[in-house]
Length: 57
Image (cartoon, rainbow, N blue to C red; front, side, top):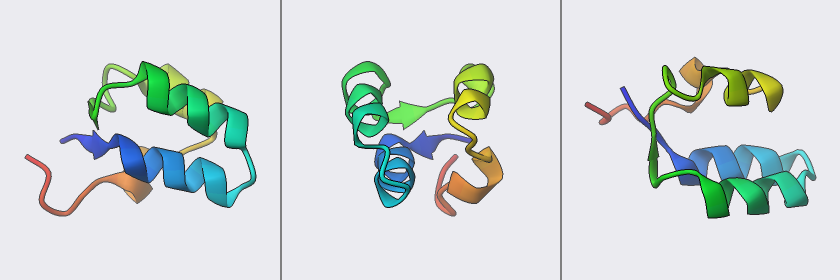
């Protein structure tokens, strides 16, 4: 299961967290592994289940 980086960026921008969204765009891969980035997602207060693409492997 992977999360599209764009979904994370959109969630952050929707909250008005532009600087964090910009950082995510620069630092994370296009497809984010939630198991590998659990701590980061928790820090950003994002639930991976809410961000997963239906078509993700």
